[in-house]
Length: 287
Picture 1 (cartoon, rainbow, N blue to C red):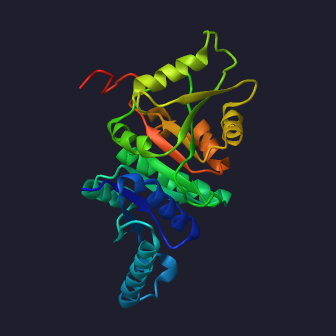
Picture 2 (tube, one colour; picture 1 turned 90 degrees about the horizontal axis):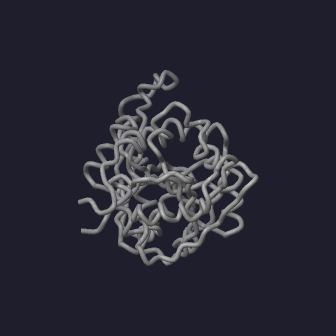
Picture 3 (cartoon, rainbow, N blue to C red; picture 1 turned 30 degrees about the vertical axis):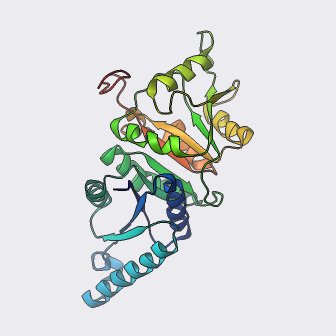
């Protein structure tokens, strides 16, 4: 059975770009795509109180037909699910049914639309599923397998959660070079912090032990500026960020480094959930 990817989609250009990128990203493992559309019943919207039930169902059927046409345009097998449930309910059902390696969605360039997606879809998906989440900006380059992947890591150790560990074979299947970027903090006192970051990556088993990894260090810049500069300098076509529980479960996400990078990044971003640092469920060497 081939692995699965779930794409939250609609009939917009950013959603189609995300679906196409996810299809290419999963191609080394022949991943199957599920296009999940959250259909909002017009009868429940006060602005559409005159719409009849027949018109509503026709609209839902037409939506599904348009998404099936999108599925046929993708370079891999895909099916369509149209759900009238809430985001969390629909995604949880799709995760239960398909056990995807990751979930994906597109990001608009419009600031208000981007914030809406981040807070009303991306955060609920991370909180509800703890699955890796791929976010594809509207202005991202055309879909292709990653050639240069940038992992932006801080100096803290991390433990990938179970879903992130399951994604490791896909990362290993890409024909990509890997660079770790680390922005030196103003108060970092330990010697060779970059080597410590590489050590944490090795212990995480996120990449095969023999994978060559380069180190990119920046200093005298903010963490956000450092990450964005590293993308440009390394010509990365995919950015990997850790989604620590305190970032996406807390109330300060809108002020986090992750959220700020997402608002300015022009390459796809893969968020990888980790375990809570004080309650690791898995450590290297443990079964």
